Amino acid sequence: MDVSSLISLEKSGVRYYDENGREEDLLGILAENGVNYIRVRVWNDPADADGNGYGGGNCDTATAAEIGKRAAKYNLPLLVDFHYSDFWADPAKQKAPKAWEKLPLAEKCVKVREFTLESLGAIKNAGGKVGMVQIGNETNGGIAGVYTWAEMAEIFSAGASAVREFSSDTSVVLHFTNPEKTELMYSLADFLDEKKVDYDVFAVSYYPYWHGSLSNLTKVLGYVAGEYGKHVMVAETSYANTLSDTDGHPNTVAKGSNTSSENILWDFTPQGQADEFRAVLNAVNEVPDGLGLGAFYWEGAWITVGDTTGLSGAAYQKRVDENKRLWEEYGSGWASSYSADFDPDDAGRYCGGSAVDNQAFFDAQGRALPSLKVFRYAITGSEPILMGDVNMDGTVNVSDATEIQKHICGKASISAESFFKADVDGDNFLTVNDATYIQMAVAGVDTAYPVNEFKK
Ligand code: CA
Image 1: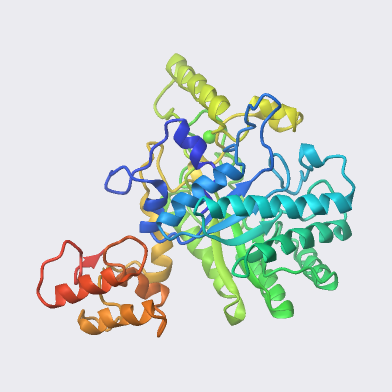
Image 2: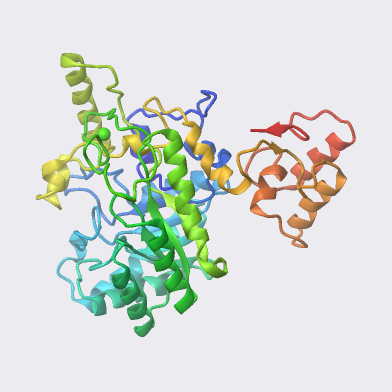
């Protein structure tokens, strides 16, 4: 899950609660529900000369490092999403950072390499576990202020070389969008091969209102996997669990807006949200040879900084005005007015709050929706699981503890499904403690852990 706006939201007063209403670190709640990877975007310098943040989470390297450090506590690795810009990069915008604006291509490549290495180093030093790195965001027609594929290939290669130097265990991801443009996707993959761009994962965005059918998504990803042996994934998807707004800033998906494509197959309810994500995972999983890695849900926790539900007239306006103050001060909306410094025509003009508060896995009070369970259910199914039954034979005995010990010493590895049953202390790590708690329970010693109990 992408949680890039988390720090700004917390500074604005947002708190998160699990399904039982217990306040917890968002990252802990996500891990508990089976989220197994965190995505964070990085902008080079998302602030004006006076240090006022542009918003959208004010996501710079320090923010990514903070999220990475907390994610590591729950054994969650990071996908670091470099935009190589000072604010949002997407098919319509790929503006160079202010400091690189006037540089020729060769010097930009040097800067891309240096910035990537510095930023990844800072995240690692903070304790973050960088598993994958995106060289650009939705780079169909540009990156860092260059707009030809030939120039883009050089930027990709410069970024990739930095990732290789950083760590041999970290994957290089390229990220495109509009997978409904099937031939364009094929051409991009062919071009990357022709230019010998060094990368591991071909990723696309998939939003069902704009991006074609799921069968076409599988076809596009299958082409890249089949022709070039690359891993593939969905780097962004999301779906509305309601058509209501709760922060006073219009939502992307609302009554009459992005609700009528033939590829919208699900209700705008928490169940529909879970079904959409499950279907996207399935479409990626259908790519042959196990080359489909999975999908990231985009900003699944970007809820309102102040709930407007049920308010009207002056009370509504007062709440929205307070929200505006928080968006400006902490960057918790999609753009602050200060972003006019970098993007006067769009962000500076239409700045405001969250356009996706109805696509989070949390309600307006920060409480986890039942749909959040889709991450674990996609792996284990939705039937209750027998905790401690690591080898999945339907009973818990000492051989289950042995499976964990074999996993720890590298003699066997535990599947994703077994993992949920093996992690009996619920810390998201498999350690000798889990094996011990199972052995103790088998020997009739009462532990505080749910060994031999069914967990929903
Ligand atoms: Ca909104």
